[in-house]
Image 1 (spheres, rainbow, N blue to C red):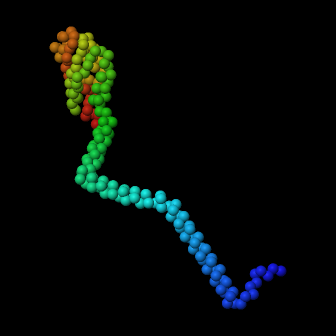
Image 2 (image 1 turned 30 degrees about the horizontal axis):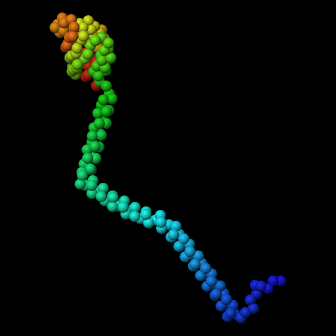
Length: 189
């Protein structure tokens, strides 16, 4: 039998021993807590203090930027940019739908092999067409007129007599009428 756990001291002394044990335990735990706190402070303060200073600096920078926005009128500029962006998107949508006239011009420009350069083309809603350009030779100009008549995109196409008579380097004007299916008014229906 092991009697080491038996305490044969009187009750007062037993209580004094127990109080001393509790006091030592509390002191040990307090010292341990203080040590842990000190170690944590030593490890965390070097990284925490710069964060506090950076936060203060960021607040100061934000205040400066708000003042700059107010004095420079950036809100109005941003509003104008949004309006411009909306208009640009509307134009983009409008330009994505090619009207009949643009398809006609594109087709005419793709036939640049015959020595003809187009300066301009005007297409009215009623189908009236006026074309100006330059032809190196009369044969090129006549070939263009024949090609346009045979394309069935025009119900009528005419060249001025002055332009037909010249042999070379002719600045010409053509006029005509688009076929009904190629008119601007039929493209929107």
